[in-house]
Length: 108
Length: 122
Image (cartoon, rainbow over all chains, first blue to last red; front, top):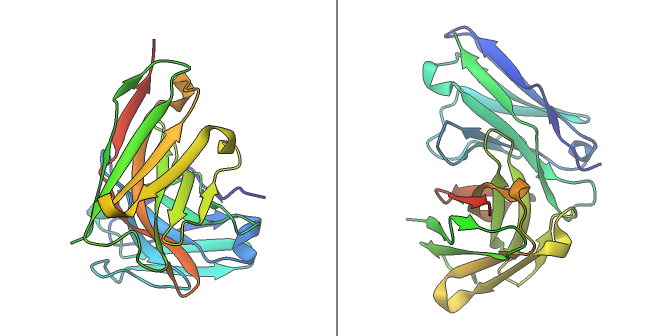
């Protein structure tokens, strides 16, 4: 399967914790990466691999994986975290990249 | 400082061929374990990976679009070119190029261009 499925939208109260999930068969074999996209902007890498953050990404962002599900957790969500989030991995063949369906995170 | 910039037409007619160029700086297209991908995003919709090309000239294409896509690079010009044939209004999207690298066995897109909106209309 070449699909990565995400919940369309989640909301979180300011300062609380939110988990975004990404499901797909290929995640049993490959780690996911996570991208944050704000309106009118290009995506930004926030998590990759087992649980790695690029330089400049706050440590409130973390990643995990189990079976066919990858998760992105924002601990202590801030107003600036309101954005669309996309997971990405290889497909089951390992020859192509695939993006998830995207999750819109609203910070209340 | 790594930068990528997309260039190409903003408007193409149905059935025409789209040619997009990604000009990179701050890294070389000959760097090992690095490459450039093209990714698109229709208005209000999700990201869709299209193709990538690595420093060793390894190429990969989206299965659903493979028959219409060609990716190539000119290392001396620091450019990666994507062509997409037989354009249709459903191909209207913002097209991004992004650097793709392999880190600890994971491929990731660490730098992105600003994107270029391509509209397909007669």
